Amino acid sequence: MKEIYKKIINDLESKANIEGACIVSRDGLLIYSNMKDVHAESFAAMSATLLSSAEVAMDEIKEGVPKIVVVEGKNRKIVAMGAGPNALLAVVTKSNIEEIYEVLEKTAKEISEALGKK
Amino acid sequence: MIEIGLPKLDEYLNGIPDGKTVLFHIEPGMEESNIAMHVLYNNIKKGIKGIYVVSETSLKNVERKFAEYGCNIKEYDIIFIDGYSSLIGAPSDAEYIVEEPHDIRCYEDVLLEVFDKVEKGIVVFDSLSNLMDMCGERDALEGIERINNEISKAGHNGVYNFIAWPYKESILYRVRRIFNAIIEVKSLDAIGRQVMEIKKHDWGNGEGKKIEFKIFKPDGIRIYIPKITVIGPAKSGKTAFIKALSREFTSVDRLGTTVGIEHGIVDYKGYRAEIFGIPSYERFQPLIDKFGSSSMGVFLVIDATAPHTFQQAKEMLSKFQNLPCVIVANKSDLPNALSKEEIKNRMSIDAPVVEVNSVSKRGVYEAFEILANKIMECLNAG
Image (cartoon, rainbow over all chains, first blue to last red; front, side, top):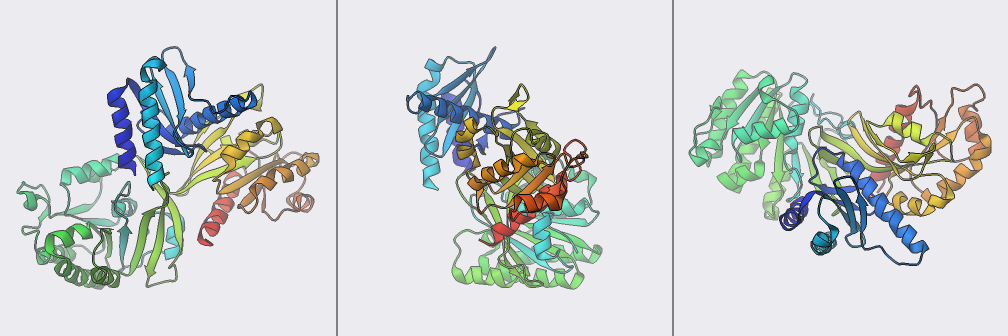
């Protein structure tokens, strides 16, 4: 399966200006990462926390499931997006969200399909 | 006697006695298919001579692969038998070269020469499936049977990688016959969880025993526990406990209270575990539901000086019924701390209580070992 995830993330990187990406299970376990110089497992757990917490907060205001969670830093952003019921996609990028949203959504769909195959 | 290098698996196997051969029967498509290399590394570190039969990649690649796991092969006593360079017509730096890699008898010739010079060694074949493809399935297996007899006579050990492509059942039957132990390596799910299960064990009764594992770069192969959840009442010291236990630790606390998931990575005696600390306040309940799922075990952290919080601790545990649990009696060095027996009586939960001081780390690893053992028992109970 790792080869499939690798291909999906490589495709994403070829289409969008992404510094690193990881695929994480909804409950915080790292599935695949190409991120360098980070503790990928911790980043995965925290990204899942971000998305989960956002989902709970959105639910409180009856807004349904959030499409995307963006955390803006000084130079870069963390973007987390659900990838089907079992996983999420988290990326680090300098791009504007509008520029990469579509390709992220497509990638998330591919991850969801890949996970559904096993 | 050699060991695989995975504590629980070695316990189930009771080590690998001299003269015995082990086959890793590996599902195609696994993230890492060279398990034998890790076994070799574990043993050459202890001073055992290594003999590495390369048939499917170049020596340079093998060297690179070892380096990925922090091993500089030049520092160790390894003889390389190169069956790959002749195959592609490339020159080789190896001390021993198999001139005709399509003939299993040429491998035998070289190995016999090496066996005469080496008193005791571990022979790694990377891989049997490749030898079968190169030399013909039946011829290769007949040759390997003769090689295994020589390994047995000389008191060496043989460790084979075998990628379990869809061979005919008669061939697989033959494969199963000629090794003393077979360990099946397969993936469990799309998340990447992987198990090893002992399928044959002719010097013991480990058949059916399994462990979950993962291979990390550069740390190598570990028994892997993907999730242990830490729960407990507020101020019981969950954060301090996870911090004391973990090699790497990430916390989200504000004003002394944890407001998100805490994450720690434990590396201890061949185990790698990921620890998820859950905040104690009721308002974080949705996070417990999300992150508590798929947990393999639970640490229930209590403050041994605060018996009024025990009832709340018990209620928290109700969400993790049927999971292996250890009660971590934190702050047990304080003068007013209740004893282990008193805690057991008051909690009346069927779980071991371990007295811990997260500051001095007393009892921290004892608690981990007990829980890890319980998780392994649970995995093997089905």
